[in-house]
Every structure is written in C-alpha cells, then in structure tokens.
Length: 95
Image (cartoon, rainbow, N blue to C red; front, side, top):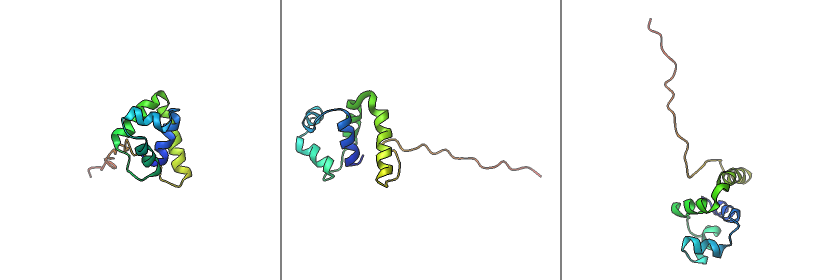
C-alpha cells in the first residue's frame, strides 16, 4: 500500500490521524511518517485499516485503483496478487 492509498483509506474511515493511531496502538507521528512515505507501511496495518474501513473497502479499492491510474502507476492490487491460470494450449491431433 502506498502512502497516498493509506491516507485515502484513512480519510475514508472518517478518522483523524490521532484516532487511527489510537486504534492501531501506534504513535501519531508513526501515522504521519507512513503517510509521508518515510516508513514502509506494514501489511498487518494495511489489513487493520481495511477492517476499520468496513463495508466501504470495496469502493475504496476501486478509488485506489483510479488514483493509481491518475498518478500514472500500474493498476495492480498489491494486497491480493492475481491468480495465474496456466493455459494448456491448443490440442494436438494425432496423425
């Protein structure tokens, strides 16, 4: 999750940095550093924030993808990589 995505998701929960810090049991400065891109955002924090967002997570995921597109970033869901399906290829005829 990028810092911009983290901030967008936090704002989607309608919580301040201080409120999110309290819920995640971290210091407010840590939230500020995550949003500024100073520290990487741990995966566990990403999951907790999505749980705090509740039923709006699906809509937020769409918004995050649009934000990535507008910022010229590839649209890839970093939390859930796509499942790769191996195509068996064309069937060969026995001659």
